[in-house]
Image (cartoon, rainbow, N blue to C red; front, side, top):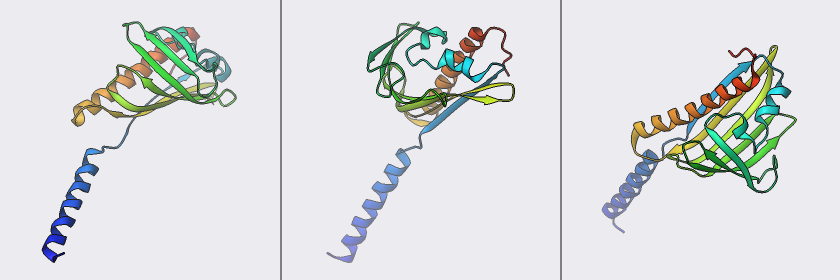
Length: 174
C-alpha cells in the first residue's frame, strides 16, 4: 500500500469517527426537586406506589400494572394520560426503605429514546426533599429538539409535584 493511499484511508477513517462523535450528543439530564414539610414516610406513601401514579399526578387518568408485581423490579406499568396518550414503563429498581425507584420508558409519544428516571424522597430539615431526575436522548436535530425535550420533562415533573402538594394538603412547599 502506498503512503498516499494509507494517508487517504486514515483521513477517511478519522473524518468518519469525528462525524460520529459530533452526531452522538451527550444524554440530556433533567431534574426537579421539591421540599415539603411532611415526613418522608408520608410523602413516600403517596408517590411510592409504582402502579398508583394516577392518584397524585394530575395529568394521569389511570395506571395499571400489566406485567410483574407492584413495586418489584421488572414490573411493567401502562399509564393513560388525560390527553388520550399512553405510556408504557418498566421498573428497573425499587427500594422501599430507601424511598427510591428507577424506571425506564418502553413506549411513549415523547420525542425521546433511552429514557430512564429516578423518583426519590429523602429527609431534609423538618420535612422531605422529593427529587425526580431523568436522563434521555432527544429525537430530532439540533438544540431546539433538545430544549423541547428538556422542557417537556421538566413540566411533567413540576406538574407531578403540584399534584403531590395538593395531596399533602397543608404541607408547606418550598
